[in-house]
Length: 274
Image (cartoon, rainbow, N blue to C red; front, top):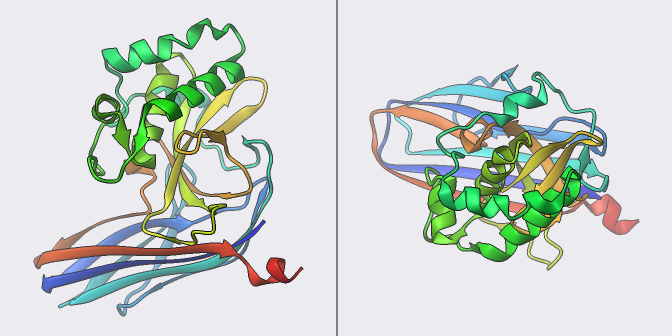
């Protein structure tokens, strides 16, 4: 699939800040099954974008915009060719051994309820892939997608207790359960092309990758109950949301910040014509 993405992150301030500093993880990289045809980041403020790699091999951009700033827009647009590799991710930059992704974070720590949930699937035997697939299905059935009750600081334990949450929450729960079972798992941020014709979205997507000894890293989308396909555009990886967040930053001064996100994901015109 050739996917076209247009993504605007818009900040408006009642009282303008004197400066804004941002770190962006908004640029995908090539790997087996994903090829970046074109990609551009533009900032509405007069500033310089500095590119570098972070610890996990993600391509990040940082900038400092001097104010006063009433409105700041981060615009991303590009096209990426994707292939369905049955969830298997190969050829990505790997800075660490898989065992690093057994490390808990405050957002992914297990509690008694997640331990009990994950232990239901340990009896699946030595086949890690089967165990993860069964757990994926169970989690997708157990947690209802709901944008209201959670926020970016909601932990896996809190979301699991609510039995409701967004893709970030389901991903954190999957990661927490997988790590309890001794399977390295990591957080992936990116985009998802929906098959129901809804192209306009208010947020990006998130899923997990788990390390299966016979295959390597495999993508598991708990929100949709599937392994990743050519509808998934992989952007950044980390231990949890905080280390793979599309946008993180701080401002100096100012007040009354309002954030809105506009994302449009569709098939590129070239493919549609073909």
